[in-house]
Length: 126
Image (cartoon, rainbow, N blue to C red; front, side, top):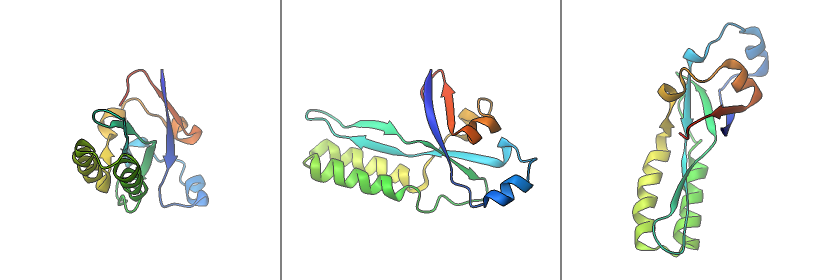
């Protein structure tokens, strides 16, 4: 079993969440971001961030900015700016502008209790 962390990034206060007890996972979207870890030889390794939970109407905003910044610092400056790091860096940062939407994959697997606990256990990786 693979355990993922879930971060509730909705723009609501705790009082609004307590008052609205009939919300469902169908009203939410789930987004992950991609970050890279350089290797000495070959392409960098792609890894997924924690799962961010948003309302369907919310914009992603600046959630992906820290992953874009991390990729530039680690892969380009520390990784030496190797030729294939640059290609992977552009690809990863393009995905991180809006995030990778995994709502369809998690639709039948996630419950309200998973979001409240902050963890989700899956048998297969995302």
